[in-house]
Image (cartoon, rainbow, N blue to C red; front, side):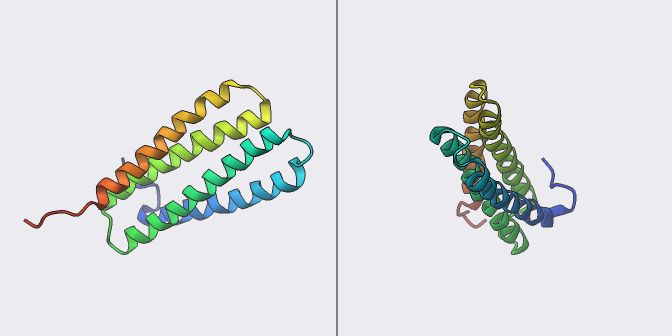
Length: 133
């Protein structure tokens, strides 16, 4: 995998964009969807927003780790792309479930969750202590 266009700095842009979108979606959910959706569907929407926001923050940390030189470009690319894909699939499936009430979208969300777990595992692997020599 390669870095997104813009190199290592792009993780900061992507993270900030996802975070801003999560704030906007959270506000939309709190003000426009409260009373429109069932409590269960509103909770599903809030879960999508929460995971999007948390992983946006993770991308901002990734950006700073890359700039600080504590993570190689290749490792940052693997982690970043996996977290972005996982966020898109997980949160996207939940947003689609809420918007359409098509239960099949709920079955897609665990794929995104698996990608998020994989991204964190990649990060842990890249951050492991290495023996000198």
